Image 1 (tube, rainbow, N blue to C red):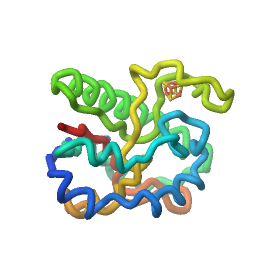
Image 2 (image 1 turned 30 degrees about the vertical axis):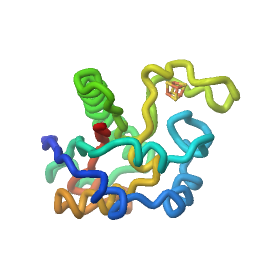
Image 3 (image 1 turned 90 degrees about the horizontal axis):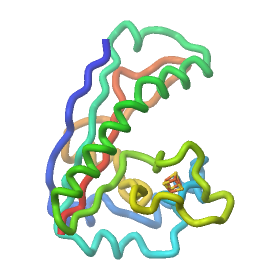
Length: 183
Ligand code: SF4
C-alpha cells in the first residue's frame, strides 16, 4: 500500500540561499547524471543560477513523501524490475506535482515553479540535437539543477532523511521536492 504525504513550507531566500545553495558543489553531481547536457532544464546553463535565486524573496518548498509500505519495501527485485516499479509509482506523482506547481505559478503573479527533478515535458528532450527547447512555456528547472541541496533541505525544513535503493530493495520512502519561487 503506497501512501503520499504533502511536503509544504515557505522559507525566506535570505535564509534558504546561504543554508542550501552551493552551485559550485552541486554542478559536480549534475555532471554525473544522465540528464546533464541532455535536458534543457539541467546544467550546463548559459546563465548564472545565482541570478535566479537572487531575483526572488522566498521559496515555497512543495512536494511529496512517498511511503512504499512493508510489502513493497521488504521485497527483493531484479535491477530492471526495480527500475520499472519506481518509474510506475513515481511518474504519476511527479506529473501531479508538476501540474500543481504550474497552477500555483499561474496563481502567483511573478512567481516561478521549480520542478521535482528533470523536465519531462517531451517523451525525449531535444537538447542532444542542439535545437532549442520545444516547450519553453512548460520547462522549469529543479532545485538541484540550480545548485540546491535537496538532502539538506529535507533535513533542515522537514526533519526528513533522503534514502536510496539498496541491493535490489526499495527504501521505506522516496521524496519528490520542487518549489515555487515567490517575488
Ligand atoms: S520541454 Fe521538452 S525539450 Fe524542453 S526541456 Fe522539457 S523535455 Fe526538453
